Image (cartoon, rainbow, N blue to C red; front, side):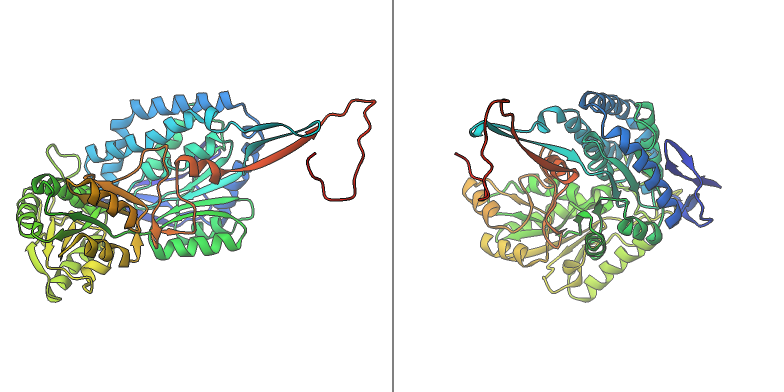
Length: 498
């Protein structure tokens, strides 16, 4: 049985702990590898390597850092297919979907390639007689990322390229469910001539996480996961003096108005709900049908859900793969049963799906629930699976009220042909990322990714300009260069400009 090791100081590392965890192939249900679980000692080893590397990497030129990022970006292009298949084999998503997440992660690398412009400081001449002021930003030191299973390449790529390009060193703790992508990325960094110790990977569970959150040598932690864990990460890390980005869960709504093109809306909502088996923090999990749009929308959604091709992620023609674990499969199918018992209409029932030749895989089919109310568990819980709930309301204002009353505020979408309705929606909805006729409004790399309410704990979104600010801190320098013969009176009062 293959053992997936850590990556510390530029090479694989077995670690000190004998503990391992299984890594499954979700399409077959079979264990395919074991992943080493780091102890606190292993985390300390990674921190020591990153600390030593920071001494030289933080002093490297912006040109050197940019050249590494350009080389790394090219390697991501050249090995996209290979990395996509690694992701598919451990996560279950289709290879094409995995390639899509690599592309969206690579956009952040491209953003990092242009940091020469973003990192420019400012200068103010003659703020007082003979006095100038300028500012610049410097890296923090050793920083860490704790990332989820659903995007084993993209979410880490939203973190470490910006952290590294700004002069920090990085420790990644990926999900133990699909760990191989992180090690593959580490190998690409080495080929891009990133110095040893600048990028490290430690695999593990709670012991490794707690060691990262409490380690005195780590300056900042970025996290993406569920809201309860995001709260824990934020509270623990900040209490130990660290900066924290903590992105939590989601319950994303797509509102469909009567004036919308229902076929267009249903096609895009179907893809947004069932793509990656619904295991996305930006997945569409609720369709809010307004007024007369409801019956026609549900009719098309039903047809589209039944047409989704479910199978192994590496098979040609597959549109939706299995869930990541057996437990996830059971949880999602149980949620459909609970919804049925609470009065929802199960229009399409994906439970019990068997894929020929993969009967032991963690498959469930798309499920469509109609007449869901906001009191039902299927609405309140983040199911993280291929279940789309339809909530019916009478007006746009009522739809906005439903969204604003939900504790999550990650992403939302509106399907309409009305500019007035779109403007009212985007101004009044309490959500961080909004799409107008766009079902999954993930921003480009030069904008920041982050929700509101329980979808973001604290106030620091991820990637884009917010990433630059998060991984650096400013210095402001006030200078005077008096001539030898010049007499400058030192005053005891608080200094002012004159």
